[in-house]
Length: 281
Image (cartoon, rainbow, N blue to C red; front, side, top):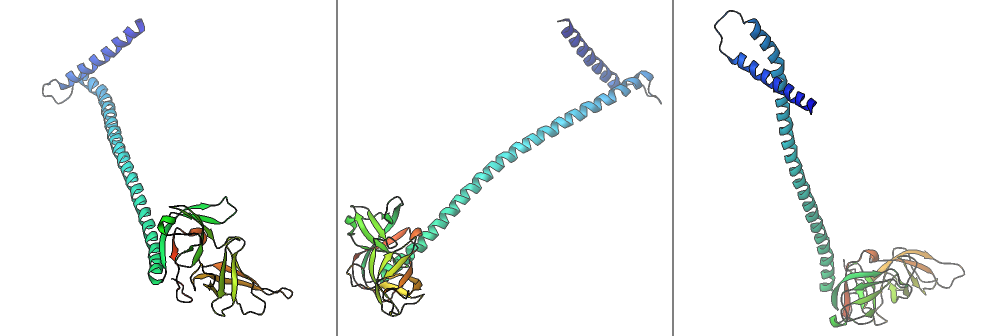
C-alpha cells in the first residue's frame, strides 16, 4: 500500500512539474536579448520530453492508420477472393454447358440424319462391381425402350439394353464378353461376330484365314440378326493375327465409341436402316 502511494505521488509530482514547466515556458517574458537561466534549464529539460511525446503520438497515429488500412485491405481481399471463387464457378459451369451442348448437338445430328426412331437418354450410373460391363440410363419401357434395343452415340454403337424398368434401363456394353453383334468389314464385306475382349477392346470372331482383313478396316453392323440397323459403326481393326495352324484369324477391334466417357446416348426404339457405312460424325 505504501509503495503504491509513493508511486502515485511520484507520478503526480512529475505531472505537476511538467505542467509547471509548460506554464513557465508559456508565460510572457520581458523583451530581452537573452533567456534567463531558469527558463533555459526548463526549456532544455522540456525539449527532449516534448520530442518523446511527439514521437510517441506520431507512432501511435501511424500504427492506428496502418491498422485501419490493413483491416480495410483484409476486407477487400476477402471480397475479391469470394468474387474470384464465384467467377471460377461460373466459368466451370459455362465450360460444362458448352461441352454438353457439343455432345447433344452431335446426338441430335445423328437423330435427324437416321431413318430410325430414337430416344435420347442420360447415363446415370456405371456398374463397376458386376461381372458384366454395363451402365444405367434414365429411360425405360414407358419411353418405348425394350430388351435388345441398340444404344448409340454419335461415334458409333455403345451396346444393347439387357434389363429395364419403367424409367431406367441397364445397357450391356459392346466390350463385354456376353455382347455379340453380327458385323462385317466395311471394305471387303467379310462377315463375323463382334464380341467383347480384354479391357476396352473387342474381337471380330469366326473370320477364316483366307478372308481379307487389314488394320484400319472399319467394322459395321450387318443388320442380319434383326437387332441392329445395318451400317452402324462398331469400331476399327487394330491388329490382325493369322496363325499358321489356326482356322480363324485373331482380329482386335477398337470400339468407335469412347465407352468410359459416355454421358448421353440415343436408344433405337423403332428399327430401320441407315445408309451403309454411315459414320454419324
